[in-house]
Amino acid sequence: MDEQDLVLRYPRLWHMAHQGAWPAIRERGLMSSTALLEDYVIQGDQRTRLETMRRPESVHIAHPDRLGAIIRDQKPMSDAALIKCLDAGLTPNQWYALLNSRTFFWLSRDRIWRLLKARAYRNLPQTVLTIDTASLVAAHRERIWLSPINSGSTLFKPQPRGLGTFMRIGDFPFEERSVTRAAANNVVELLVEHSVPDMADHVLAVHEVMNDRLLGEIWRSPDADDNDHP
Image (tube, rainbow, N blue to C red; front, side, top):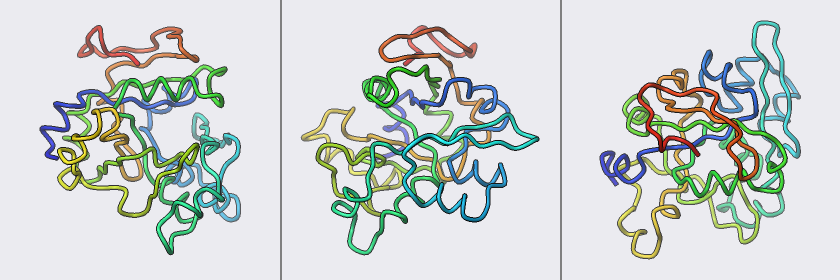
């Protein structure tokens, strides 16, 4: 898959953050869990637990010079399921650490709504960013990976996964997979290593959403159109 085809087929990306996250994202960028732990100077055993072990609940972190942040739970995964579906030699702790080192974006509007309506999140307002794919890819192409699966879930029938799950844009077998898959199930995730410091430059709109309802618009870029929403 080439970059032009990715942008043509998936012109928008979506990211679900916690309610109230936009001011911090706008000021300091979108950070992976690892980047947040570094930025908030979380060290020692606490960092090891948060970075390499499953988080059953979201965790608030604080720093006197920061706005405050939440590291999201990992309820859709379990160690037992990961042991069954991970490549030989890869441990659940290594998988958690890998996922925590990247920021995640959905390429399908249907998938962001599916996440918003999931049992763990449906009763809590969420902040959803709508992002210009072309802008993000142009700025961060050297740190971008694509995934053919929901790498952070082992619910239902967990698909096999490992280091080879994540591919560079040019290595992703889009045409081969498109024979049996619709676009929404072809490229499932776009990931950026570590963080996106200039996230605000690529966001087109920010909405507050709960379950299946748009509660309101928080911010909109002059470049956004009427279809830029979850």
